[in-house]
Image (cartoon, rainbow, N blue to C red; front, top):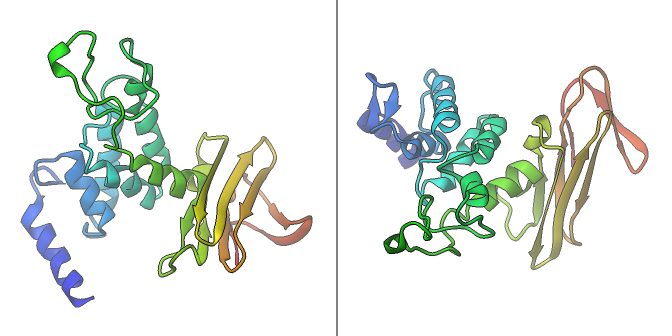
Length: 238
């Protein structure tokens, strides 16, 4: 609307630094929020996305629990799901990989803090079962499994399936949600010569399904054994 169009350039002007080519103090959160909210001018966007991806690759997840909501989705919205997944899987501190594989307390749940090892810092005790950073689940559902609700829909009336991670090294993914209409689910598996996508929606819902082109050369898309598309790009089915 009019207010949003007015605020975007004002935000950019207030926080953008031409000297550092970044927003605010250069934190991951400041860059991710600007990208996620579509504030970055088109001529600056590609370089800023690359800069954020490089920051994650080098330094891990240095963002707090509020900013995690934006970090991975900001990259994925700019077709950098590969960078988002690399950031999540990056070994070492800080990050989700560290929580799971650290030498002190290998985690099976989300922590309140990245860096607290209760075996070596008794005064640093924080929660080991915390909702902080749980928004990573939204990224995994929407961009890895590819299960989302179409913009403008409500109550999963129209399902959008678009598995962006099919173009990465991830070999398979699945997600499901129990809506008031019934189960909404998407699952995919990529092999050396095929890509299989299964979608399930409840009665009363519709779906827009985007089948990614994951192989070079000609691609044939089938549904229930019948050919529905064949071409050079991703296929969309309603």
